[in-house]
Image 1 (cartoon, one colour):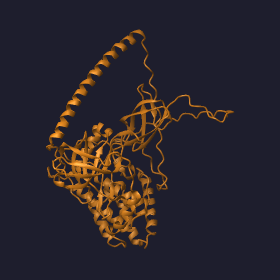
Image 2: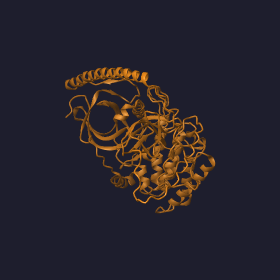
Image 3: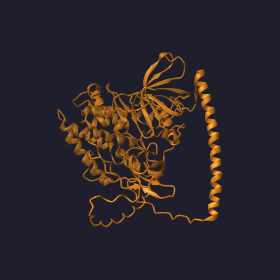
Image 4: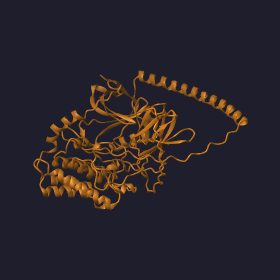
Length: 535
């Protein structure tokens, strides 16, 4: 039994893992024998090294601490564990809407009830007052998509991942107003122009409803009006056809009303979209007239079945281990940056003091070593410059931007292909640089007598791109650039420059080391603005 005031966490399993952090299911052990299951979101070493990543994590906790709604995941605290930050959140067992869609659509009444709950939460998040200032929070989620909506076995609906949300509160750390965040597949047209408004969340929710009703995934919506109208007509046909396959089939008047609701939520002009409160009321009125089970009854049997199909086992050495909070914890229910100090026992304090002195000693040794190396380097370079001056190496022309990989085959394509979005753009939008002309194809060599192809003349490795980045370049210490995915690169360490959600300039996204013969996959996160080597 825990008897002191330092809270501890027993790691039970890994719920999910990204490039910059991991979410664990953990058992919280507190004083007096109090225990409960929580979701523990912890940053990896790469995430802790990025100040922007750390700021986003802390902002997410503070935002969630300001909201009170049944359909928004709750947060307990923002704390330090070991050398990094962690968010202690409500553990929500269940499956996300992506899983529902991929295994056949839920009944139309269930889809409307899920949409109704999300709309209610979006309304509360935008209009709820800040407890400190008394002003509306004006929170815009900016990433409403199926993967961020979870359904429990009791029929509860929860919106997840507020890491890129926009809200008006003074204690926000990360500043993201000039960057586009979210998934292009669910992004409203005006957001490409840099307009961030609650109507963008309604647009994303409209596509989520369309996917639940049709059991299909659609490509990113076009950004020009004419092609967007073709896109909407295609979605209308997909929903209408699917609703007729239900048992019993949805009657035509109800099909028309369902489609009309989706089209209003997905209107090209943001002024024509309904408010979240209006979507909530429309869903409530319509589902009362439809046949089929209620969400709670349906979830009691379907969610456990889908959970068994979706369960993913992670081999993580943290499972079964015990972690303790540091002696500092930031409450998040007020959004205030005040720090609450918690008394630690004598053993913890002694360990902290010893670690502090060890770090100071190591830092002094490192500084001395760097000074010595700099001194010898200056002497050596000075002698080299006096004996044999070397001309500066010519700067190479930038390599052509690699073409984005094609979408998965399970997506439903509209008759008119949506316009590609390369690379993400900042607001205001600038015209993208012209694509470099493709290099002329090499003349095919005559067939050699030997069937064995010649070995490559230059050793190296290959680098592929995955995750959220649209394009990326590698740059070595000499300034030479290699587009990711364009072929082999020489062994060495490279700086990564990647194009995330909304940047025409590209951002510095970390470093990667490539060995001879190695095949490297870079996993990039638009939330963290970082790329790391996938393991």
